[in-house]
Image 1 (cartoon, rainbow, N blue to C red):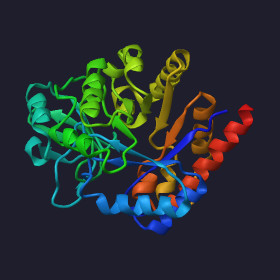
Image 2: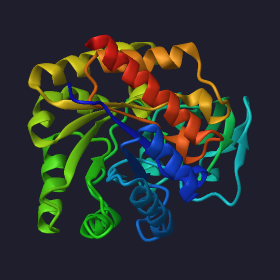
Image 3: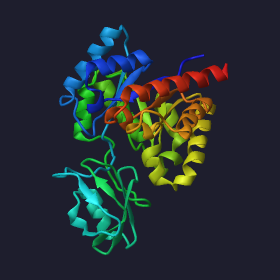
Image 4: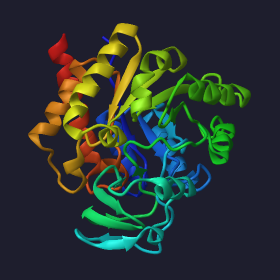
Amino acid sequence: MKHVRIYGTLGPACRDPEILKQMLAEGMTGMRLNLSHATLKEASGLLEAYHSAADACGVRPELLIDMQGPELRIGALDAPLPLNDGDVLDADALPFPENVRDALKSAASGQEILLDDGKILLVTDGSRLCVVRGGVLLSRKSVALPGIAIPSPALTDADRAHIRMAKEYGVTAVMQPFVRDKEDLIEVRSELDRSGGNEIRLLAKVENKTGIAHLNELIPFCDEIVIARGDLGNAVPLWELPAVQKRIAAVCREAGREFMVVTQMLDSMTHRPVPTRAEVSDIFNAVLDGASSVMLTGETASGDYPVQAIRYLVKTVREAETYLL
């Protein structure tokens, strides 16, 4: 039986080589770098620490880069912005991307705006935004407008630059976000091949309704499907998300295509040393459904317990694998 791959996400919480060594010693098989928050060049010190830790442990872990792609994000804020329930603010008060601003101009009153994977909910009222579910908004957090398709290119100029540098930085796989159809993947694969990245794997993140609808056509053009539950949970009502995850997993199994499950697998461990019972059950069931990979994001990038989070992830995955024998 092939072992499930286990990934963390690089970030400030694990920039110390000693912490990275401990994570690798626990059984972590690779890490992701989110290029929506830092370029390869800006993260060079973090990547050097990662490769150094791997050498010290005598392992060759993977390095996945998560592209910007057509994902929508808030721009830079001068400081964290508290948004309280009931607050009303002008639409120009937030640094939305230009294509989001254009979409909001023609949107009907009552249009929902989900920020930071849906943690914050705003609703439009003419030119004003009403805070329905508040929180503290940070720079570069995700933006979603349910029900509105916003045109954007599959690859940004920054994405193309990163692909050209990927081999130099030891990248083993590229994660393409918000994949809409096979053309998105063909474009990324072509760019990789032109840049000498023929051996670099291509992972298709399914995180919107368009991607779900085109799932069967995506499968032949990628090496792995990523069930990206953060934005996927914004695209569909949250109570429908488990069924969507199960259906995607079933299609991948039938097609013989590997798939990854990611987002909030151990979210409580961002600030707690022990996970919830529901979280370990979620991980266990993902393996039973046939996941080839699982990944932690904020838990290791900015959490208080990155080593412990990886330990629980590894032990739960391996227990699930034993159960399947």
